[in-house]
Length: 342
Image 1 (cartoon, rainbow, N blue to C red):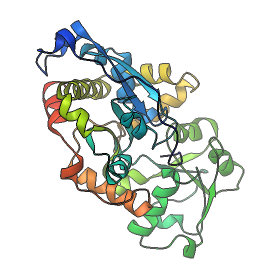
Image 2: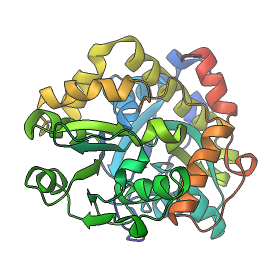
Image 3: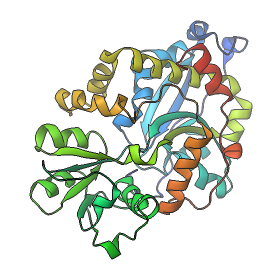
Image 4: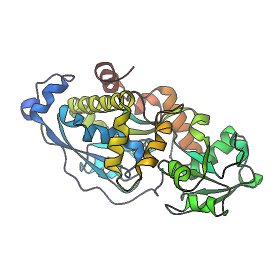
């Protein structure tokens, strides 16, 4: 995503017991509201990509399923891991590869829900720039965020693996820039293209007169770009809480796909600094051919293979680990059947 690895441990409280809700059915969502309990999501940073969690929060779905949920930004993609290990949070929402790195280092993590369904990086350029495939990166100056941001690692991976060529040998130059500087670099001619997330792709279109010319997500295919994971110990000792979480996420994803107003409403509340016109412009990429927002939280084996191949090729994971070890779809499948979309 877009922050260096490593950093301070989180600072939130561990979940308390279920109390009077202990005997309630795992799928009886409406009954859960009778006895909510505190819980915390540690998210990497505050991103529009994570809209299912914000909808679950803002539309009362976490509360419906038994949680008094807090969402706390950790300040980087690796930071939710120490938050889980210190029991300051129960659920991590961040780059899926972070669950692999933590497990390789001895802290077994289990992925339970898909939050972002494609590697959501777009290429923006001035109008008239031809860009039809990863071959069109050749000879170009690319404005990115700093490594290990996916704005840097994803185009590098695409060139090497999809395109089959070495970027440096083919005249590609990267301009690794701080937040907010990529679009200006294209506008003033220092870069030919920029590789960006949302909201930047829509800011490029609405405020800089640039065009979104290529989707790397389309090229790479469906992937579990962002997941929710928990510690193995938490899953084994709190399966009811894991189910409730997946129920809320499945309902949020269904609501986002069925009611177009929800995306604009919740995104505007979560990101008041972003012009609503930018949010509206982003809708097509969030729900288009390569949708950022999944239809349900189930993680497929192919989505796992795609992201792990990407992360391994980009050098951001220490080792590839198998789907069977790292993913438990039991809870997401139940949630999708009862509350979500097929």
